[in-house]
Length: 277
Ligand SMILES: [Fe+2]
Image (spheres, rainbow, N blue to C red):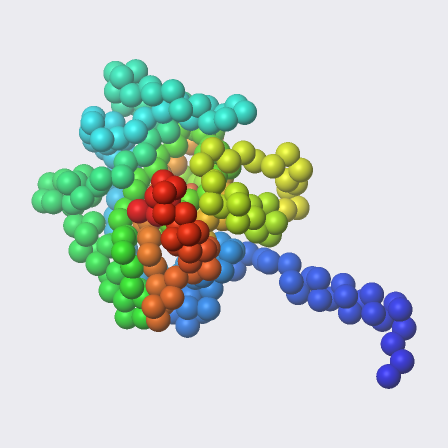
């Protein structure tokens, strides 16, 4: 068949357009099984969001967690690097109405103590963690760790460009955040970067057209693919998300490619510090 050069170019254009990753929502477990171990983030809905929970008022969340010694509270101001200055003492001294408008970023990784009767997150285990884990298990998955983290960001706070050694279900509960990943993560963070990702910096050449971003109003849940670069921007109001962090996640005994590579590398470099936990 005779194909004109123009025809070829048109076909190429169609192929390129088809390859360009787009925002997606995964609504059933069959689609989840096809997508979980890829390199692109997607939203979760329908049967893939099998829990509901009414969070306490945002002032109460901030007030209880800021008094918890295990909370990490930093300035979170944006510069060349994220400002990790510990501002806990100052932040705890503010009246709560001021605290929720203050420049801060709070993270809490050991929340189970707040799940009991009368606790800040009473019933969270039965109403969120258990249904999620049951559904994930029923879909054929197993894991070595799965636990919640609360992230709170004051107005206009952002996280740095970074990669996580985990799959994260990021569930937005208050305020709106913009979760920015990349269309071609492996181009910007090849294996060598993924192995040594601590302190990684945003590549200067990275442009807006390289981003694959999701606006996350309250109720949105996003699956953040293992070891893919991302950052999160908050709007001019306080924002709270609950992240379920997963490690050692396997379907039919198999890890995702990025985690398997790290495991292989770790086996070949037994004296290097442990990357996976
Ligand atoms: Fe992250």
